[in-house]
Amino acid sequence: MSLPFLTLILLLQSTIIITSAAAKPLMHICSQTPNATFTRNSTYERNLRQLMGQLYYQTPPTGFTNATITGQQQSSPDQTTYGLANCRGDSTPSHCQACIVEAITTVHKTCPYSKEAIIWLDNCYLKYSSVRFFGRVDVRNKFHMVNVKNASGDIAPGFDGIRQRLMVNLAGEAAGDPARFYAAGQVEIPGSVRIYGLVQCGRDLSGRDCRRCADGLVGELPRFSDGKVGGRVVSGSCSVRFETYPFFRA
Image 1 (cartoon, helix red, strand yellow):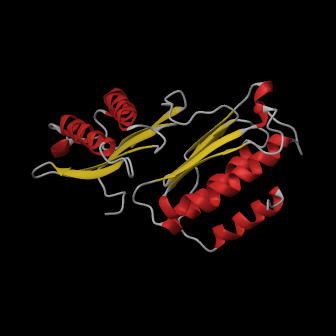
Image 2: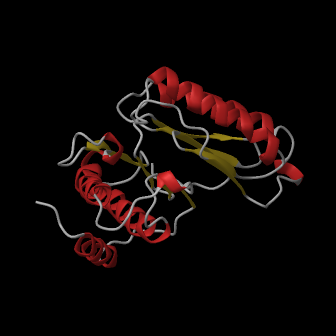
Image 3: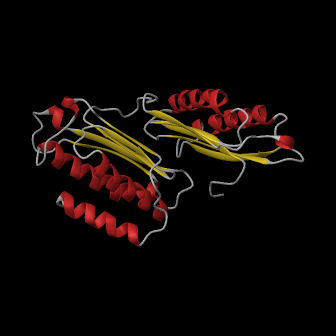
């Protein structure tokens, strides 16, 4: 049984009230071309509504779900919807659910008639399309964020190199954990600070593609975050982040 889209959104909004892990989205990208939009009450909208329901219910228990909805008109492949939701590896089921709720309600408001969209939050990301994308490395949809504080004084000597070695190691650990494709860790600069790092890939990827995606993003860190105490690169398939404060759950 499928719920009317308005009913589903109201249900999700009521869930936000009783959860505490929802946060403002970091970034979203909507399809803009005319052939990448749908009309109200169309088959695609009904399929998308059903897809969002599946992502909402199926993601929190394991932290990941991908789904395909073909609907009633299987002779119209352009009406098929593909989607996935991936929560951060340290998220509890309740935190994961709150994040998926926020992702669904926000993407409905910001990309109301887009056949393709992706939205990122701290604890999850959600992506859907009319084109099958599972198992494909997506670094076309990507953004950078940086902590504006400089790594100066006692922090500066060797900071960038130590950070880079930590992130490379975490990329290898994440790719070697197919159950989660997630790794987090820390390293101490003697007499100075600790650097905390996190790497995660979407679980639709292979281990090899996870490593390729994560290594690529880690390789971008020096270009914009050298000399800074924090930064992240986030794509449609993987993400990397470092800070000098603990930002993930043990």
